[in-house]
Image (cartoon, rainbow, N blue to C red; front, side, top):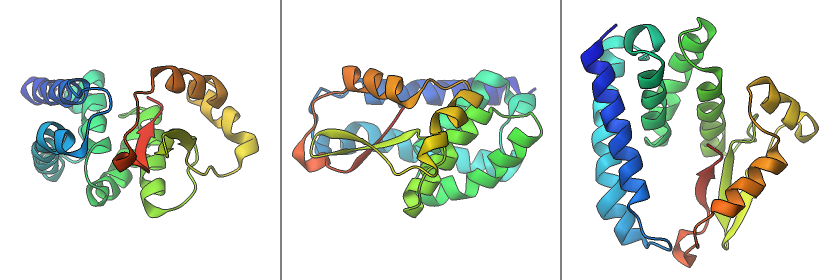
Length: 180
């Protein structure tokens, strides 16, 4: 295991979350651009280097917590890099070296960016201040697919997200949100 890389990924994920949590409710795009985007750019640049050198940083390389941290950084990376990471994460999950839940979230995020229906119902948009589930493949089987990964039913998840939802700004319509 690469302890230094593990520590770095965990630290970067901590910065990622701290930046997002520091935003005021109802923040504007300028605050997002000043606080969150620089953290995302730096993390993406470093994760690109890590992936180029090691492939997907899975459980064997960095441990379970740091592998999850790498996934978080990928979730907040630009769509082109998410596309690059998806097959690497798929392979790692198939080998038991990455979380199937993390794979589900990244897969849904990539499908959403492609304009395609998601599989696991992890991705939402805020439209006109209303939390909206991104289109889902086979909606009747959604909760069964979610349960197979240990995710709560979508209706329970939606209620939890709505309870935690921050006030929306009109200039942030169609912004992505996720259930985790």
